[in-house]
Image 1 (cartoon, rainbow, N blue to C red):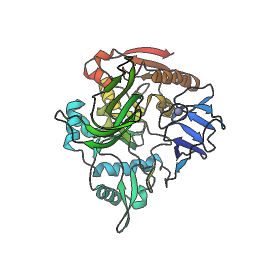
Image 2 (image 1 turned 90 degrees about the vertical axis):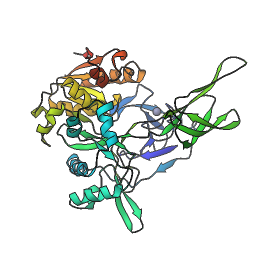
Image 3 (image 1 turned 135 degrees about the vertical axis):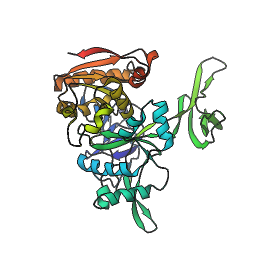
Image 4 (image 1 turned 90 degrees about the horizontal axis):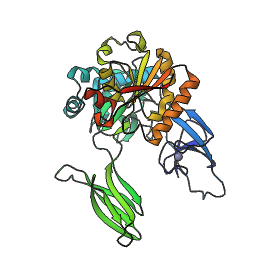
Length: 418
Ligand SMILES: [Zn+2]
């Protein structure tokens, strides 16, 4: 089992498969390996935390074969307070470019106007010479220790000693703003998401190396697949799913598909020397309609310049930016449907009376989101007297709230909690 330290002493994040839900990441286990706080499989014994609801499961200490634990010890520095992160990230804004490719993505694929792209301050994480950017950022601050505890920056050992540089994949950088317009984090929409194998049934396998794209631009990879006792080396193409049925019985044996993995990543450096993790707590992004941004002084809460009695919530920062301009409402972008408890304090501080959740049309009916919504209603009913609603629409009108608005429609809003 691969574990990683958390802020809570004696508790680790399970980075390999969770013994309860079988997924990687998020779930926690204690040092003795007797209790799992699973994020996905419900139990009656649970509590709410900033990363979502955690369900307690007890492992039978005799039944579980104890796997050797690799505990990743990293020299992580605690994340600095918001005002400090804002100071460093605003210096970074001045040093990072927005590449022509990302600019054109925002204009043509995201249908944003030029002035909107500018005022929302999107940037590009460069491929090379990141240490030069870090150096220029330092020259705008008091000294190089200002980068300590700022997620994304870390130290690398070089020929002439350690120097500061920046972590993360190459891609479009999207800033996260607090309710006081402080920039306290970034997500990167990576240009090349890592490839993954999606396997079902009696098959195991791994990606050996990525190959040049095919004529139609699809990504390809050389993979090693293990079926029964045979190992095959094959070349797979993205979105070309291979399904194997038994010729005798006609029953499903296995399927395998090469897929692009996660597109959005936190800009974080928690696993590196002098790096810091973005979590504890994760940022949430408040998007105001873009014309307001130039009147929004850092330090002023958004309700000082815009009506925040009704606030919308969606998943992801870019979607929130688009929705704020389409709806002319304040919109929070949260890192996942289960992360609603992160909103409690910011919503109270804004004096919000009515929250409207607008998740993608294809996920609203998934068990995970249904569960998260149930928990969410329970949570806000207990903690506040805010009204709660859910925005819904037919998926044929658009997948996300941003697509729906781009297509000229508004969602139907129905009350979850009066
Ligand atoms: Zn789990």
